[in-house]
Image (cartoon, rainbow, N blue to C red; front, side):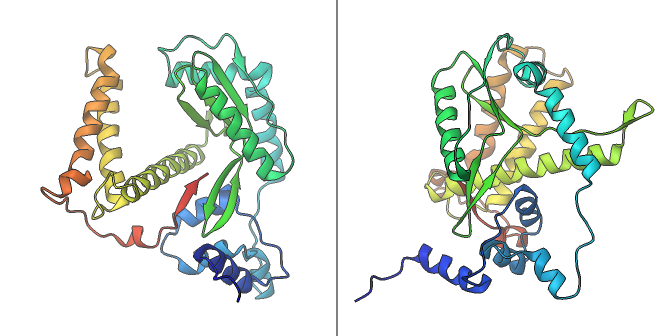
Length: 299
C-alpha cells in the first residue's frame, strides 16, 4: 500500500504536472518576487510562478514575446558602482550605514567580511545562515556579508534571493542593503528613477512587515481576526510618524528615542493582541489586497 501523500508533496506534484515534469522549474528571482507581491490579486501569476513556469517562453509561444529587458549598459554601470562602494572591505558602505542608520554605535574602523563561498544555492544559503548566526551571536563587531544567499518558500517551492549585502551592527541587529546607481545630469539624478527605487524599497519593507504579522497571527500572539495588511499599515503609519517627528527636531531628548519608539509600537499593536481580542475584538477591514497575497516564509 503506497504511503499517503503529504499536503506539501501533493502541491509540489500538481505544480510540476502543470509545468510539465520533464521541464526544469524556473527559479524565482528578486524581480519575479517583487512583481508577484505587487500583483497579489493575480491568481494566474501566482500559480505560474509557484509552478516555476517560464512566463517569457510561454508569451513567445503564444505570439506575444516580451520586448523588455535589462540594459547591458545599466548592468555594467551598476556592477562598477557596487564594486566602488564595497572597495576596501566595504569601508564606504559601512560608513554610510553607521552615519545614516546607527550613529550611536561605535564607528566601523574594522569589520568582519566572512567568506560565503559554497556549492549551489542551497549550500550558499546554509553558509549565509551560519555566518549570520555567528555575527549576531558575537556582538560588538561590525560584519559585512557580501552577496549573501537567502532562502524563502513560495507555494511550497524554494526561492533564493541574493541581496547586494547584509550589514550586521555591533548590537546584533542587521540591515539588508540594496545598492542602486543613477547617472548624474547637471549634478542631480533623475527624480523619477530615484523615486521608483525608493518605492521599491518601501514596498519590500512593507511586505516583510506584513509577513511578520502573519507569522505572529499563526503563532497565536495576534488575534486570528486580525488582517495582516491592515495591521502592518497601522504599525508603519505609527512608526513613520514618530520617526518623522524625531528627524524634524520636534523631540528635545534624543537619548530616549528607542524608548519612545518602543512605547508607540506597543500602543499601536495592543488592539490586535490575542489577549486583547478576548476583551474587545479588533475590527479590521477585509481588503481584497490581502486575500490573494502569496505567503512567503524565510528559512
